[in-house]
Image 1: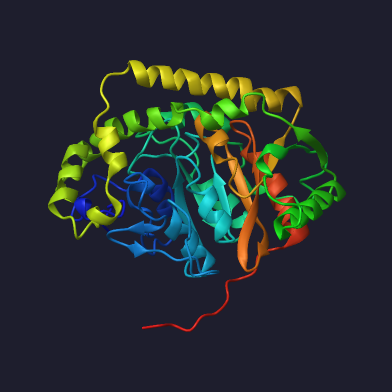
Image 2: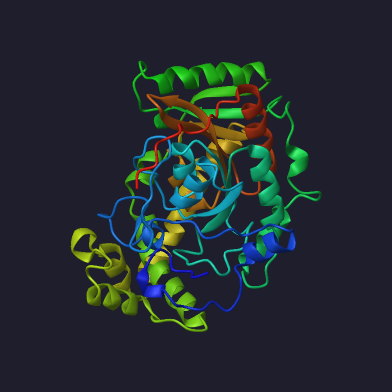
Length: 394
């Protein structure tokens, strides 16, 4: 199967080996049915391209609404939501598992960076890229995570993160009473919607359920530096630098490839403007990354993100002795992204047929707690329903 990140530029390329997570799935007996569609270059080609679109895969559609599926792991969420596959894998740099899981009414786990191998995955940045399961249930997601987590000699980050993998795996944390005694923080900054909406009313009901199941909700919390995090440019700067460096390294490692550098990809798109819809969508993010040079600006951005995470999310969690924060949809993705923290999203409801989820985020290595919380919530609510049947149009 071709690994192309949705681009015709990589069609015909030959990888040296299976991705690390795929090898683990095969060894566990999983049957690989195929590759999912995605937002081209993991939604890092252009700000103008629609989410869920790639030149090779076309426009993916949300099976609940037939509208946008979000991304960049759009096809991973679509295929599970539409009952085409039992489970799938997605990758996240910032929101690419949590967001499509949110709008396609499926469960997504965004692991701690390094918990699962990124070897063989077309990269954006090693500081944030992570591979995780997208499934219909928390139990399926936990079992997939249990299978793919662990050391891979082709991804050095897995060696350090292996200390977070619990002995006995993640299935042991599928407890119906997993919410009992958990301290959950509510940061109202991320609840910016009207009190008259179905989402607002539904989430308030879910808060009652969380309390009834034994959780302690610590409400009206604030991340002191939230405005600096949201308005800052450090993530975008680091991403541009890392994308160029990481993609060039990935392309050099291929056994055979029509392109060997980011510059080659940009040139391919210019040479095939109709195939890649260059006039419609452009490639501004690729061009931005290609222009990066040196390390001073990159190092400053990385240090700033570390400072923001330490003085922001980590301080919130430690000061309030929280097990997790609970937020609507995928609104918390950037906070989790810049610090490499994990998150689990679970279907929470539907507003006029449009799905939305509830996300539990925690500190590095807290997947066990997050699975306990998410599974207990899921079993207490059982919100998810399959998408409506639609007449096939040919």
